Length: 87
Image 1 (cartoon, rainbow, N blue to C red):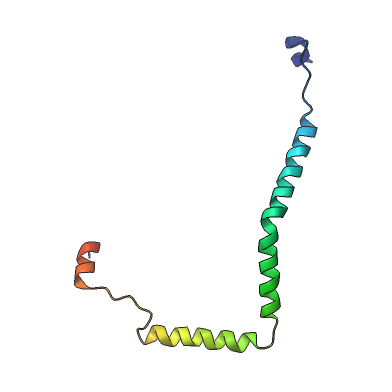
Image 2 (image 1 turned 120 degrees about the vertical axis):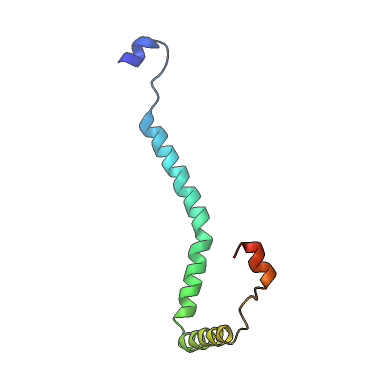
């Protein structure tokens, strides 16, 4: 090989073993990082499967809609704010 002729005393690195080692490290890191996310996802899925979840969800969404329509969730913008924003 050309590498061996240029560097006669050097060993050719095993690229496949290096790639395998990097893949194992990435898989271990991903497993460690994703474990809490998977646990939270399974917890939320178990809650969403309960029979009381849909009515509660509907009441909360309709309550937020009512609050928004009656102005409780809106941020007031004064004339000074509009002038500062360039309107």
